[in-house]
Image (cartoon, rainbow, N blue to C red; front, side, top):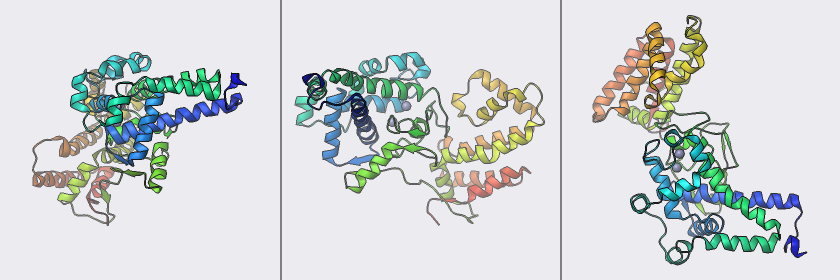
Length: 391
Ligand SMILES: [Zn+2]
Ligand SMILES: [Zn+2]
């Protein structure tokens, strides 16, 4: 009996237990380390926060200050030489295979000092978790052996590999490399899958980089963020309070007058506005133009579709050349492309006074409405209806 440990479980049961244990670890990372500690987008009851901290010590040897500091630096320096784990800079192989090593390298005293503010420094952190960060995983190995016998060894190995592979490797690597983009945020973040269960919703990485202060990572009706499900569940028991997930702008049907609030609402909601511009203006105009495209352009239609709305800093020189040559041949595409950049100037251009921004938006709408391009006219009317307050 000792061979199978105190619980004496069958292999399917053991597999389920391994999955459940690693799931608790993933939930601890996404809720506690990521949303609560690094981004402060989630308040947690101290008891629940400490449970997660204890569990992470037990299963990952991960220190809250280190993780938090490295992650905040990742957002602050995204896809630059200073980003601790950018596949754009370091290559996907390195981030996928050496994710955990990159964390260890990045945890310098300067980084911890600069980005590690507001992390636990209580007695148990100072005397146990930080100085004895590996005791937890040793204790876990002993518990596993006791409960699951020899099977405790592979369960422990799976537990030890889970975060380096899924979080450090897959989220940090694939999440900045492959997948779809809902929003044109300034870095290369992507949503790996619309159903975020395996890694607790962290699959929705483009949404997260676009709205880093939101505790909810899903943005479209078909996206599922299981971390958000847990937050709502804990909230029912008074153990969690999400922040930053409410709408930052309101659409007021029938509103026609552009005012300072409209400008503010549009700027707050800029990523969503630009997504709507892509859907409501760029794509329909592009579809109309497709019939007129010559042999050189048509095969690259899908690429062109992406390039037209791509964040400018992410367009490579060769892509820029291609885009320019198409815009030269299709005047209507040039018009809608330029209008998209004029609109973005509202929040990209620094130092504009509110009144100047208001004038710029009014001019933008007037021009769009006089452009003779139906989709652009309709979009201007759509923009006018934005406000900071609901109807
Ligand atoms: Zn990222
Ligand atoms: Zn983050």
